[in-house]
Image 1 (cartoon, helix red, strand yellow):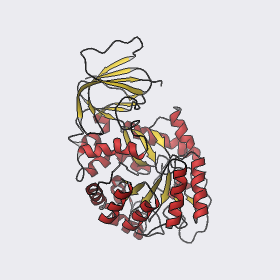
Image 2 (tube, helix red, strand yellow):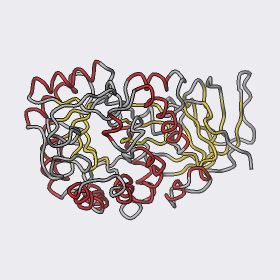
Image 3 (tube, one colour):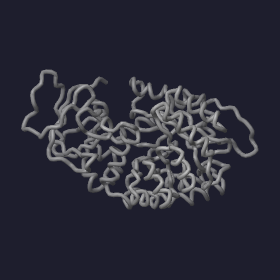
Length: 417
């Protein structure tokens, strides 16, 4: 669909920078961008090329939401099975994942490993319907690290996924790490994903262990910085978080075991925290069904209820917090459950900012995404209800989101009431 000139009348615009909601405002949109915000007038200004005027009758209009930690190609929760799935089938199934995210109000997502340049281009060109993608390509893992999914005792296995899914780039030593980063950049990665500590779903590593040497971490960051981008790091423990941030990592993914000292280091280095609470609560119900080992289930129990405390610690030390979910397979449908999981430790406005202006800063897209302002992409949500007072409104997007616009095009048209 082509973008058209639009005026959205009588909107109460959420300012994601200040956290305030405006008086009645008209939002002027042209060629996929916001061109002006003006106090609402009784009648829209006439324009020979204006295609539509939409009166939202005083409803709150949010910037399009941003999820900073997704896996759009994780069409199955079993990463072993996923690694053996043909890429054409993964892409076909990913269509439903992408559409689901868009219809939950996420007009932009940061893929934290798996999606490639082809699926990004398919969305951009309209072959797939979904949010705009910022991709990491293959995650970097040391041998035996979090993304090394080979079972104990198995040396090698054949992967048919051709880089699609969650299969890692295993790299050991500074030269291999540098080459692996350069390879992901060559393939179009917008940011680099590295495993800096143990994980829940990996079979061979302790959750609080560190991964990669300081020199390897620094090499990855050096290569990313040279390409004007950054490194996002999977890390849970204070030790792994601190080492990664000191080496130059910009965003810490998950971070459930964050403590006061590690939070201070993050603040000093300007690092972001991207918690992903929904995935642990989903896996809490699914772990046994997935046939996880006792050690994996023990790791899940250790981090499952620690996420809110980590957010509280980060918030108290002024660490910026961005919104993420990290769901896999059929659990993608639980993406909107993340809102309520933050409600005990963040205000509704803070949570909204985490998925708009803060998330845009993570993506290095401040002023372009996550805001409703002249020059920004016209990504907008018309909400029935007030999520600045009750964030759980967004937990039912089918009901709450009356209109979803991406780049000036209605993905869900506003229904007059």
